[in-house]
Amino acid sequence: MEYDLIIVTGASSGLGEAFAQALAVRTSRMVLVARRKQRLEELAETLSKRQAGLQVMCVPCDLADATQRKQLVEFLREMPLGRTLLVNDAGLGDYGEFCSADEEKSRRLLEVNMMAPVQLTQALLPRMLAGGGDIVNIASLAADVFLPDFALYAASKSFLASFSEGLNIELRGKGIRVLAVCPGPVHTEFGRVAQRGGYDRGDMPLKKWFYTPIETVVSGSLHALEAGKARYYPSTKVFLSSCILRHTPLWVLRAVLRMRPRRVHPTDSSSSAS
Ligand SMILES: NC(=O)c1ccc[n+]([C@@H]2O[C@H](COP(=O)([O-])OP(=O)(O)OC[C@H]3O[C@@H](n4cnc5c(N)ncnc54)[C@H](OP(=O)(O)O)[C@@H]3O)[C@@H](O)[C@H]2O)c1
Image (cartoon, rainbow, N blue to C red; front, side, top):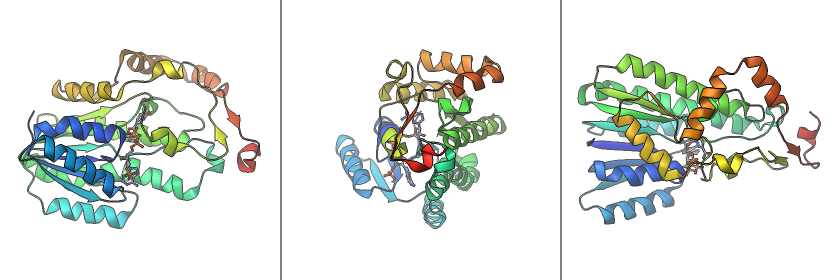
């Protein structure tokens, strides 16, 4: 599918950068959004060198900041859209018990994971309805389950997946497809950003076996979008995990999650008090 404009949030690293790399061939205009301007500019240079005629606009924006989000929306409102693809990829996690979470990090998580995709979608949708296009929301396998020590993140991704599914139905037959991508673990900067000092998640069973290559997530997501799917679980392992999660009685899930392996660093007094 070709687009007149592709917008990717979270394009400075990980999945967002990989989406931007893969999608550049499908358009002549891209908008890359994240806080790290230099990373965006390096990516823009690589993409423009690789593809003659590609115009890449880098928009440094802190999506946790309402004023900066508004400026981004105003920038996009000034822009001719045509057939547009919006990839809401930017997101962050916060490993650790909620009782010891940093208030500001919790707020930022909710703003980036929930408010930013909603606001961007709302700002673009009226004109996308005229020109056509697609929306890809990067949720998570965590959308399918409540997760202790990752409670806010899992809740924010449930929100995003649910929002996507509702929109997908509303927009059916109106020329706009909406896809929620629900990856399991992927090697990116995500884990480092989500980590808190003093908190150790412990060794999650089957963790290494569970990782999906970044390229699989991106190429699979784009195929799923073409196929008109509403939700995509990259890899059979992740898909089966989702099936198991959704068909397991809640009391069993609660019992299993209570037994999660975790180690709290002895110097983290706020966590060890709990
Ligand atoms: N990696 C995984 O295991 C995994 C699994 C399931 C779902 N996901 C989801 O995949 C998406 C991409 O994550 P990733 O794994 O690629 O992690 P990543 O490498 O840490 O990338 C996160 C991206 O989000 C951007 N971002 C974070 N906070 C932002 C803010 N306040 N304003 C603007 N941009 C912000 C970052 O850019 P700046 O830092 O430059 O602002 C970065 O480009 C996220 O939504 C994540 O929840 C990841």
